[in-house]
Image (cartoon, rainbow, N blue to C red; front, side, top):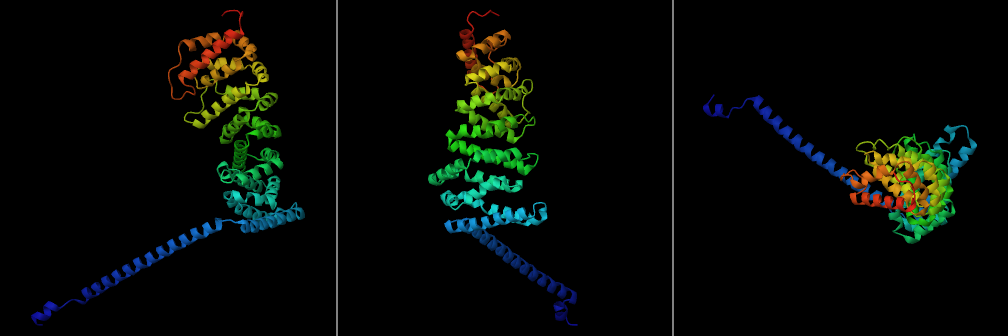
Length: 407
């Protein structure tokens, strides 16, 4: 073999390896191109789906009427099958599922307050309210969720006309009674039903925000009694906190509701709730339970603005409980000071002032007056507020117990 041939000679294995490398590179490039095309297609489909969803969420009068017609058909079908097979759930289960599905399709309506008037005129909202009494709690809970969204304050501010029509209609239909009935039958041990209770409380918050003058009507129709009953449940949870917030709203500016609370033994119930925090602070790090305790103190303060409740407070040994709280270095001491200020104020607090002196309350008050507790970020009252309440209490004691025996 010549020298030129030797230099140009390449073994067959090397040629094959080179060919394989080139093929592999081509395959990789092809694979990358293919993957890029797939990714682009996925992005295109996602974008298309988003566009379709946006289009589906745009609702007009014709779309609402079609939705209402479908809703009425599903409601009727479910009613018929339930009446026909009352003891055979498997026979009406399919219609129940279909009804639940169409209820979920109603949710976008809550974002179009301008359509509320039409929804009322075609009877759609009436049918929804009827479903609050549905035997299946899942169905009624779904309706409750939509009502909470429909009455959202921010949404209703977008359309004053639609909001007014909605609130007037709900008042005519005695929405409070319907919702209280739901509260009575829901089992909060079931998460879905506990969520429904939370949504109902949200509806009442929305209503009282939009129509403060309905607070008395809401309390009279059973909500105040239910809240007091719910507060008696020992275990603390989010719904208990929400109940305390709604109770505070109902008592804030309505003296009739304060009197009603006293007639329902509400003062005793509130004192029992606070007695838990006499020697024990709320769970460490649980800001919500601290808020709950503060709400109950505020509710008690509001209720004491009604002179009738001063007597309930006296009989329920409220002075004794507040005195014990003042002696303990717990968070409850701040709320107790505030409550005492309300209980002893004006001539209506004369009997409570005398009782406070009889239980040696001055021995508790004056050390606090002489040395205001140091600043603490966990405290519910500032140093200035603490001193203000102390001075007010001493002033009321002096005014209402002239001639009393000195301690």
